[in-house]
Length: 231
Image 1 (cartoon, rainbow, N blue to C red):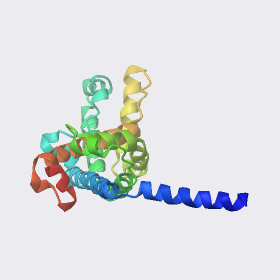
Image 2: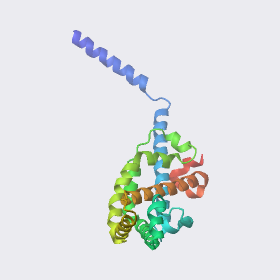
Image 3: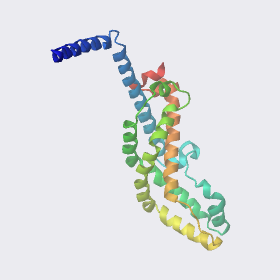
Image 4: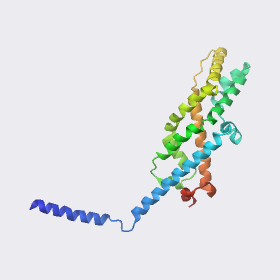
């Protein structure tokens, strides 16, 4: 008898819970659909921004020439040490060669960068949709950078490493370092591959920010999935 009473009690409790949890207004379903739409808009913004960045930078010497060389990989940390030393000894042309070849290397990587960028965007977990949709500045790209920078940096390593030999970046760099040590008797501690990868990635993210701002301010930069940015 006690067992029957327990079963009956559980059945009553289940009915009460189901009744109390029933979404009479449809607000839960509406909120769920809204979050799906917001997530879609955020991912679409990132994909369009990434595609725009690659179109501008990984095309026709884009890193070197685009926007008057705004994204040019110029080895700024070495200008006052390695580059000046070589210039003073008649080897300044090596720095010019290194810069030119490095930017050609970066511009040639488009096909190898599409997949990791797409995967990073698709796997991005968003928590606060409204903060990214309605935030000031470029919150979507900023959020993407925070959570996917390490992954993208790792993914960019192999295509850069392969092209360092193809574009004679490695050979030019080795000659420059040897000359520098010969003239200064000072070892040079500089990870050139890491510098190229980080500068490329930073440039792409910066150009993505430019596109995100346009998506927010100019309806012609939005597709149907990004209609939420117009509100």
